[in-house]
Image (cartoon, rainbow, N blue to C red; front, side, top):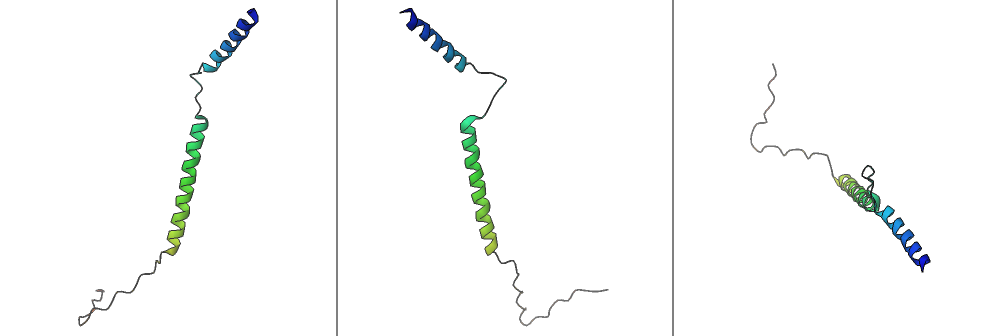
Length: 78
């Protein structure tokens, strides 16, 4: 059974090299990409919704009603 222990030793060697982390190389990975993609979709949806709502807003001011029975104040010139 020396062949069995040699293959087990080889498998353990590969697992150890996979478990080692390079402290100088840090990546966000798949989870970081998923979080970023979800946030980007949320911002896109909010921008689209805001654009739709801003299109419904009427920016024209209604004229102020005349003061009943009083004189209208004119700006002083001079």
